[in-house]
Length: 621
Figure 1 (cartoon, one colour):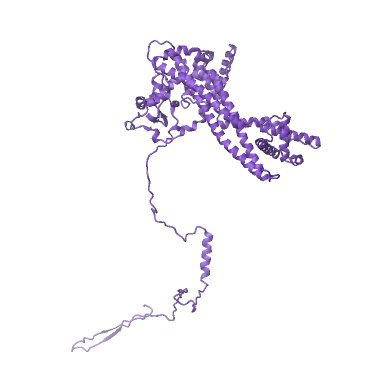
Figure 2: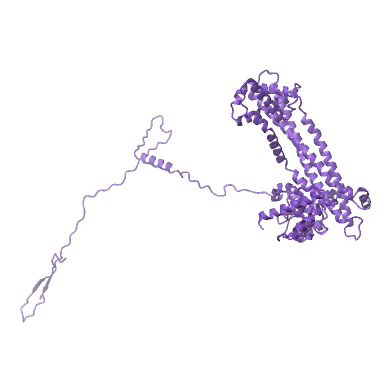
């Protein structure tokens, strides 16, 4: 089956499940249905094989299981999944939310802006109507009062006339559309700044709420409300955890242990989401404190610039009005952000309704009266000072808070719960203590509730990780609660997908160290005469060539005598030789003569001497 066909089948299954639930009086969102479908398929107890194509019988079985699960009104697991889906669909980061808010505001103002920029007013009545539209646009964009309030309109008109009189309409109409839109935004900021300044001076401010004061009251109230909700959830968590620990291993229990664990997952998920919201409220409080100081300083600077002057250069005062307007817009953003966070806090509360229905206080309280209920802080305090010995593990790395600079930002697995307890005690959620030691295994980090748990987990981490993954398949709400989105990539919540980059965080260990740098390890070998530019080389060659035709002169006067050494430079004469004669030689035959008969012939015969010339001819030599 191709990817397109698989998507089509899944969409049909989701649509059919939604229709069946609607027919039985329960309206469900497609996102929730899709999550439940994945949860049912992942659960090995249902017998679905993700590597095999679903048959018609498999599809019908899947639809029936999903419908039964979605219609179960007594399921903590379903309520937890609903809570996760709601938060995933409604929560975004602060910057993304404000960007979306500004985009929506621009889209709502677009028709008004288009009506102004497309205007072709000519007559006096048309120009007056255009000016009133600009006033309305300024009021709508700034959010300072209603354009239907006559007092607000008069004040805004007076402020606008001080920076944009009627006579400027002709110039405005001659601009291109983009320049018109830009000028409208600038006029809005300047009018906003003028009205805020007048309000602070007690000369106006009709329809303008005191946003800094409202925020100073609203943020503590919101924080207090969230803290109260958080405390209620934590009280439930601590009681459920103590009960599960006490009931674990017993043959007979007064309440359903599996249902109690699902209730614990539900309360823990609520705690996690409230902490996310609370962190955003704290960020808003920090921004408010900073902006309030900037707003006060900007207002004082504006007052010092204006004082009692009748005429002020626009280059000095307009930027101050614009800065004042931008700060006020930041206050408005904080109001909207705080309102959304408050609504999300209130909307999470209905997902806890089953606690009072299935485990009311009059049932739980007698059960915990004879056992010790410990908070997370108390459990961590019990193991304070106990830590693993890294020397016991030759092949694994351990980190400790005091030797790791960024340990609080490490992506701890299982949302900070003890992995060993999760694997061995049927997904019991106990907080881990980083002080015992942070185990690094396959580029992931784990903490534990006790030294013994750390040692057991470190002996075979992969085994315990697999056990936790199998438990998460049976309880799909654990996938998001324990942040197992790497093992189950098909179910990744938005809030975790945004922080996926944190998984690349590396521990920064701290230790005492010192370094020493040798000065001039190698002798410098810089050739001063080196030149890479061939044109520079050519210039130098021409210069040397020209010097051959130059003569150096020097002289010495009585005034300069003995004051400095004088030198002159000349070219030495070159060696010259001439040849006036040459050696010559000739070769002639050497004369040779042979005389025979010089010994004589004795007394009997007369001596006869013969002379023979043996000299060779010249031609033969």
